[in-house]
Length: 163
Picture (cartoon, rainbow, N blue to C red):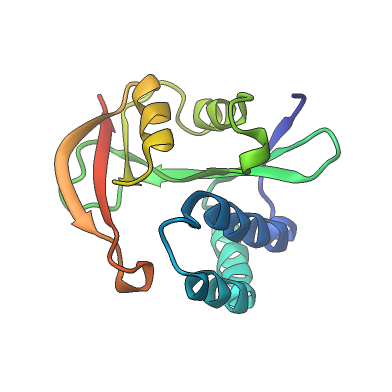
């Protein structure tokens, strides 16, 4: 698949928000009730505003576009947010649409966002595809676990670290 990567601009916020929720529906539709996704759709204006503000503040977001120009992947990384951060960089977000899984878009986003630097991330326990992808990129569970926010139905997640 041909695709292009580029940094996000504030003008991308709406497409990013819509694609983000679509990727959640594809990835987590079997884990979360329809009500969760309905709430996310209803909250799109707020998500768009948050993306615009974050990008305007200089927080890095990387986008992947397919050959037709449609947004097919988004990612973000930056300084770690955990109090016990195992290293300086956190991969906050990496989402690709199901239609392009296995075509190198996720890998290209990881390479562009963090290269081969040490980093960490949080992944849902019930997301084996993502966990396998991260293992291929040198990430391993470090034993730290938590429950997601109640708005995410307190799904369990664990931290993975690449040294």
